[in-house]
Image 1 (cartoon, rainbow, N blue to C red):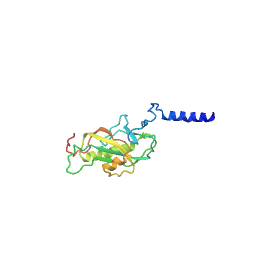
Image 2 (cartoon, rainbow, N blue to C red):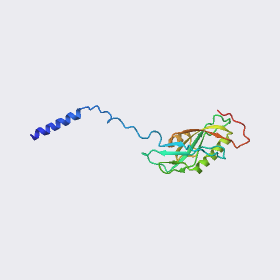
Image 3 (cartoon, rainbow, N blue to C red):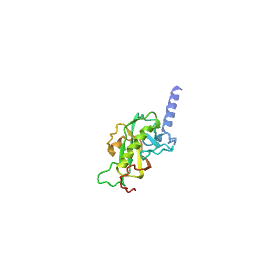
Image 4 (tube, rainbow, N blue to C red):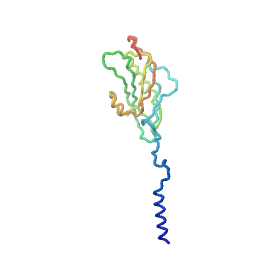
Length: 182
């Protein structure tokens, strides 16, 4: 009797192992909870006070992928559209800020950091005699990013996707000729 039970149990297991239950959900790969870059960024929607520097980029908020390791420092990269600049030499189209401390899985870049970014961006745009609406894209990058990094290094060390925005720039330089804006 005992031998029969063992044979029946083995037979039942073989039958079950060979059966297709039609349940394909168990073999389908799970959809990842987090899509995109390691960090997602957004602009703070609170009204911003005009900056005396002539340009105001809203505060940048960040959220980290909860399943990834957190960065403790990051650099803000600002690219700007220079298509309307009339210069006889190459024109820089990005500004890389010094690294800043970022704490936790979410937060906002410090107000004094954004103030420095606005002042530095104003100097860049003013040097090219730009004014009016300026198209920008911003991203967070690893703190090891060189301040003179090329596009390849920026892409390699970028922590977030590019976030576009259009800002008004009131050029404080009175001696600029109007540049055509696109």
